[in-house]
Length: 93
Image (cartoon, rainbow, N blue to C red; front, side):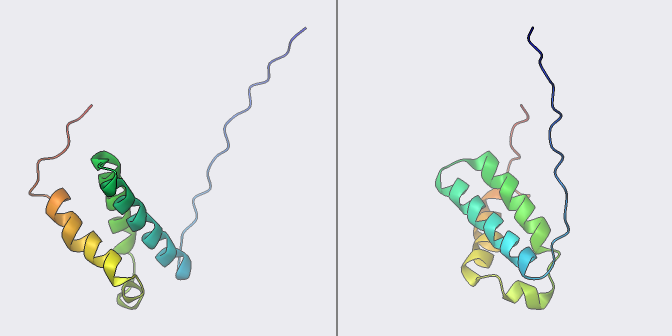
C-alpha cells in the first residue's frame, strides 16, 4: 500500500528590520534591481525598485547617509527616468 502525505508549506515569518539589517536589505534590493536592469528584465527591475524605495523611505536621514551614494543615485535619479510616474505603466497580463 502506498501512502501519500500532504505537507503544508512553511509559512514565512515577517520580521521587522531595523538598524544595520534594514540598511543591508535596502542595499541588497537596490543591487538586485540594478542586476535586473542590466539583464533588461524591466518587470522584475520595477518590482525590486519599488520594494527598495518602500524600505528606503523608512530610513532616517542618518541611516540614508549610510547607503552608498552610487546606489542612492541609481535609485532616485537614473531609475526614476525610466520607471517614474510620467512613463507608460507596464501592460497587465
